[in-house]
Length: 389
Image (cartoon, rainbow, N blue to C red):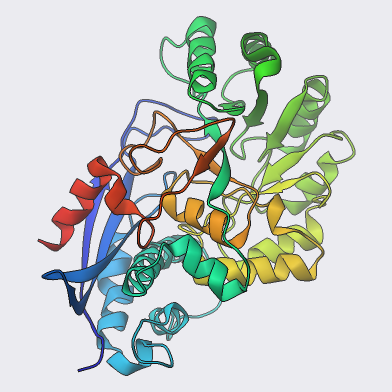
């Protein structure tokens, strides 16, 4: 009998927190967990792929249950397999999920598909008995590098969090091996944010670099005001100043901010990514792109985005995905990206690395775990394993 997907399990889980950025608080944030179960049995257990969506977008249980999971289960089983018939073909599964979907409308739909796509790739690599990052490198015809740059994202606004607490948080990241840290701006007045930045820079000194993130809060006038102030600081980047689809705003900032800028985490298709490159004034010699596969139709779409970037003269090394999850970490290692975000103390157990992985000099080394490697993170694995019971 040929390989089949026999079930798709889904659950919405809370990742609530009291923190806030310049735009939203996380008091009611959720994520979707999925398990894609196959009929291939190894060591007495079915091979199952797992996935979840990144923080910042809510769980997509309704879309998964009502549209995308049924299309996978209703598709002829052979139509979802590769040419050998011995493994899944993630691109064919992706096409089945997107059958009868109109173009455009990228947003919540892209999150639902990206969540399932993560599970499909996890299952595909497990069936091949390989870490996903090695499977991806083999398909691209190059050597995988398991060593990946990571930075620590934090510095959120929180009740009672004064300069001392902010400095202590950033120092804790340096103590854990990070060499780049990130904090939020735009949730306070510009003079207050500048004092917060100065406090952090005084704390980290020459031991690390600081990035700042406005989470799309600013109009053009405010974005420029911040740019004029921020250019006096030695920042790693100035991130997402304005609305993610306001390409004119992003392009205008280059006139006022010569340092590196970053954006892209809230663009959810290769078409929107292409518009950013065409019209957003991003500079391939210094700026950074933050597209997150778990929010933007998954790895199948992310590979199309990388092809588009190459056609426009961009290196994959300028991509450091948002999200802080193991899927982007595997993609970074397998496809040669510039690194990955990480939230050392937030959104657990979904973010971070397998147990035992440590940050050394700003880098982590991925272990040789089949698939994405979720099974290597005990707290996360308990959540995922319970899906298919």
